[in-house]
Length: 252
Image (cartoon, rainbow, N blue to C red; front, side, top):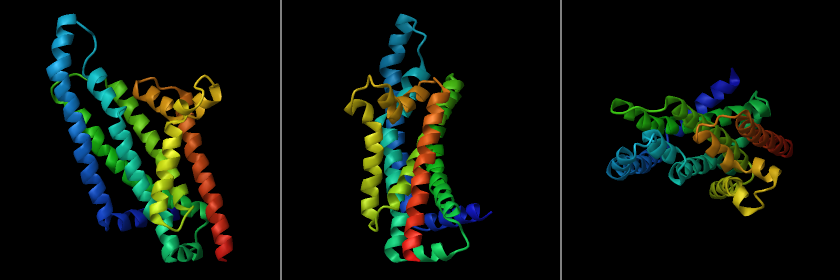
């Protein structure tokens, strides 16, 4: 299938550059530091308190949920998606290589999906390293595996959306650095929408990204939250297809 072949080619090209390896190393170091800080805080502060009060709360509530819901994890995923935006389309437009892709026996939809799957594939590798750390706690304690699965689902849906935003932003400019800024700007706008405007407005509450993510991280898996991320992803992919179709017509 041409989409998978293109995605595989893009991933191979990506991993031949130092960027993904640097991202993997930095993100793993930062998230590991944050995770170990939460574990240490639990052992030193929360665990004695829970024993004294006989509280039902445990590692899942005080380590896993703060880990997946933290600005550290969100920030590292946003950074990775934004830096990917440099290479997805913008760099090829700047170098002129996009003309060769337009001339290839691919439809614009196949081109967009191939690029998208490559970006998503890298983000999945990144997220897999983050999910291994909480799972390692199973060696010494009990975890709520259902809530852990819900948090992993939330992170996966977030990656789906971030990758589509990065791909769209990469089509808007010839400058890779500008693509990074545009990706960060769009995502931050979605994240901060509920705080920036009237949160009592039902439409605003639904369009804002953060409440949907936080609800899933807390273990409340609702179809409306999953549908939100699917619609957001499909929407940005649709914008990307329209944008590239226009660019191909102008190039022809």
